[in-house]
Image 1 (tube, rainbow, N blue to C red):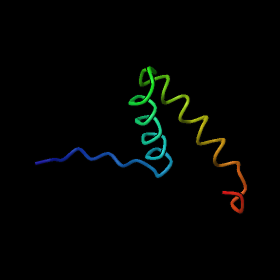
Image 2: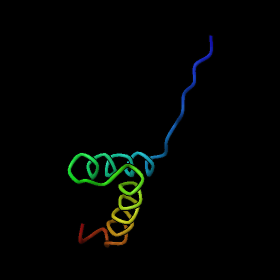
Image 3: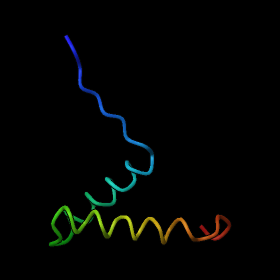
Length: 52
């Protein structure tokens, strides 16, 4: 019995969460939502910690 488990990094999980939010609340398809999710996370990650 073998199990196929894939592990995702925290970053990949964050991209997935944002991407899902975008696809459920906009007319973006999954590919476009994933691209926008990466851009959103990059923007958030460049905000200094004190400001966040």
